[in-house]
Length: 197
Image 1: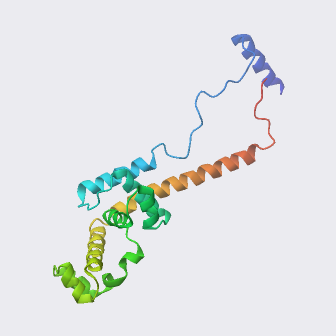
Image 2: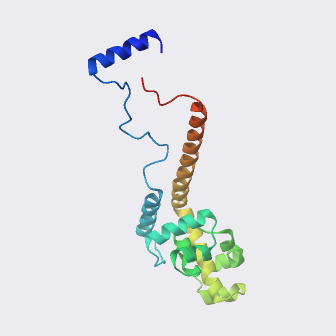
Image 3: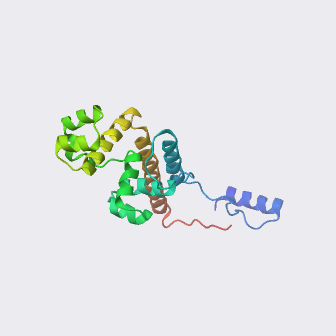
């Protein structure tokens, strides 16, 4: 401790009648991670979609948030179904409502121009199935995929972008916070940080 620091310490002790020069922090340090719960933000997007779009799913909003998280984690519909206590078909229907299509959803008749033309003409599932040689169930699913693709384009991918922004923001913030803690720990390593004058 240099002479000026010693003089300041003595002055502080004399004026305050305290022996400790420092006090503990009253507040916790700030965080790079947003206080807003990502699941609450995802739920808000789900609620907005439910309000503005025609949802077919009966799954409640918390289960739909789990579907969103599972989809972006790369989980299969069967795994998501186990997590939300539903069957995989219900999860697929929920994904469609949430604009979360997989590449595999676009396989089959969805890629067929004749199928898309028949959808545009308003053909029912039986006619669609006959036209491209698939079962009615496959035709119904493919027709739904075409409708979802068009709806995604109509809303300019807005809801998917919101989901991705929420999940990316949280992931980036957590990585930055972890990195900052590591760098701070490295910068203070070997230094005396709990000094009592």
